[in-house]
Length: 255
Ligand SMILES: [Zn+2]
View 1 (cartoon, rainbow, N blue to C red):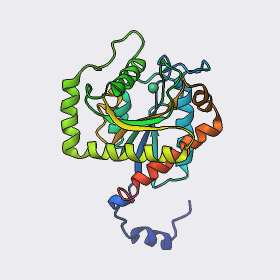
View 2 (view 1 turned 60 degrees about the vertical axis):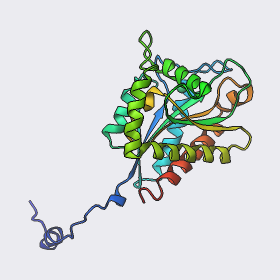
View 3 (view 1 turned 180 degrees about the horizontal axis):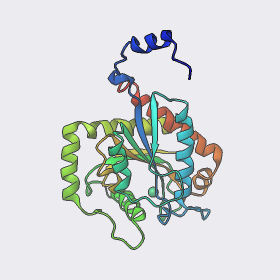
């Protein structure tokens, strides 16, 4: 057996201790592709379900964020077509100490006319009927088949959670993250409509203890946008806009 060279030993013993500073920690983002497995999500104009589109965009975003390592660490709530219940998604984000939670969805409407992108963060129901409708549809579509929709009407619980989020500053930060994402998407997609940043009672956001948003990247039920959302080039553009938004948000907060 060869002995360890003395020079190497000395180098190890006297190596300066590197103290990790807070800003050296990676910005941890949890990417949450909406639905999966038995939770199909919205049915698009071309017979494709939302769960496939959200996963494809999320994986593209993950690949783009890979080149931002080590300053960005990316986690996924799912990377395959599997069912993940709504509470487990923010639970993962809480467990890894995430700095941001980004849930990716596609919008849907009974009317073929609406199109555009919109971004949500947690809010109480009852002030914006249209936002309530989006949240209620997503909550119902995210529940396990045959199971009760989790806590959609539980406004008292939402109010308590909002109080907590306000105290910790996470509500303001969720709004800032949502604004950044919406602005980047609006900039990246002049051909579509930039709808609003709004608050709604999304079950998937209720247990997140960090800045958390739901981004609705377009309407699957619109003839043109529904087609675009199936195209690799369009999905890649969405992923790039989301990447840019995450980096912009992280800058100054982590680096
Ligand atoms: Zn959805």
